[in-house]
Length: 136
Ligand SMILES: [Fe+2]
Picture: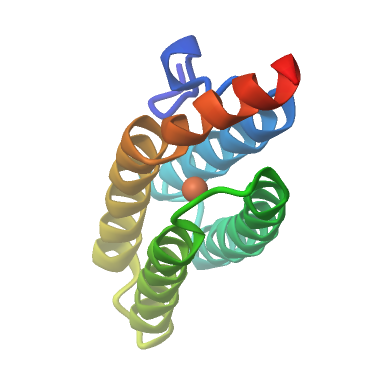
């Protein structure tokens, strides 16, 4: 059973963004499994690299969409995205210094919590704009 999973309550009203968010949960779950099942450093490292790469891709796409929508507080939203990427990078650096299990658990719990909170409190704010855009 997946511990970290997207569900309908996280929907932001956009199929592409929902799919991206689903993928992010999947990668976090993959990371969780790598740690939980002791799959080894390479598997953990791979999941983290994938999480970073996909997070960057997703944030770029989301920011581009928000810009096109005329989202009013885009700079603040971008700053939150940047902070998250920075925290992932910091955990990745911890791991590279050898703090494997502890750092990996810290990373996945932080990432999962951040993602849930961010989608629920920040990203859902743009669903209204998307809705307005569709009505135009
Ligand atoms: Fe966002």
